Length: 290
Ligand SMILES: NC(=O)c1ccc[n+]([C@@H]2O[C@H](COP(=O)([O-])OP(=O)(O)OC[C@H]3O[C@@H](n4cnc5c(N)ncnc54)[C@H](OP(=O)(O)O)[C@@H]3O)[C@@H](O)[C@H]2O)c1
Image (cartoon, rainbow, N blue to C red; front, side, top):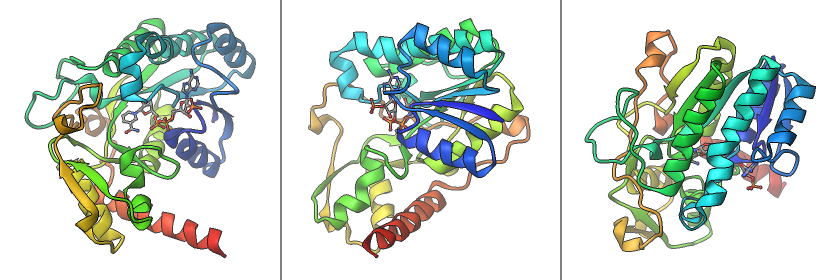
């Protein structure tokens, strides 16, 4: 397939470019500098000229606290960006996949959020992402929304991606005890994104690794255990104690109703994904030392 990726230098964008190249796809990878998804004319021109089979949007303003203090920027990137891509994809005859988030839910539910649950975001980031889902779906019938959460992998700037490397450097880490989600390995998400592009079946999919989910604390403990490191460096804290500007859902664990119904196998457990990530990171570190 000819696949155009936006946000190609982010955690998911990189994993996706690698996955698609490995499958022999023609990959058109646009990072933020090469294509700003908030610029409708640029988006129309690039997609109109390239005419890909699929556009996969991995671009977003993912700074949850930053969004809280700059809602206009959040709106421009996370809400209007997917709409710009959807219009251009419709005009070019391409399927659009846009990634959304578990933060569209308020976290008050016990158990797993499915597509039957009503989104009700509690942060500017969550609101902007939900609006992006809706605007994209309204603009283009061939839109696939992929909600994921607690994503980790190489190149990630977030806590989950960096627990082990920070611990190896001797940092003290604050691990939140009372926010739960379903961890998702970027590489597994990328593989599923590519499968969905080929299936071209519009809808909202929840794509996360299998299992009961984890808090930041339980994820960190497992990561350090797998890396053979002590958990003594972990300071267990509550979400409220951090006093961050944006509220986070207490529970944003997700399950997909649609994927098993159309024969998609569940992704492996998050612990297996995490073990794979840690092995690969160590191999990479050895290579750079040699
Ligand atoms: N990481 C998570 O835990 C998580 C959880 C749920 C959902 N998601 C969703 O997953 C998707 C991928 O996120 P990620 O984890 O890969 O985040 P990421 O590493 O922050 O990557 C996002 C990329 O988007 C780029 N970007 C920002 N504004 C842009 C714009 N206006 N036009 C084009 N590119 C722009 C960023 O570039 P610069 O850095 O150069 O600005 C960055 O390379 C996003 O939709 C995110 O909302 C992530």
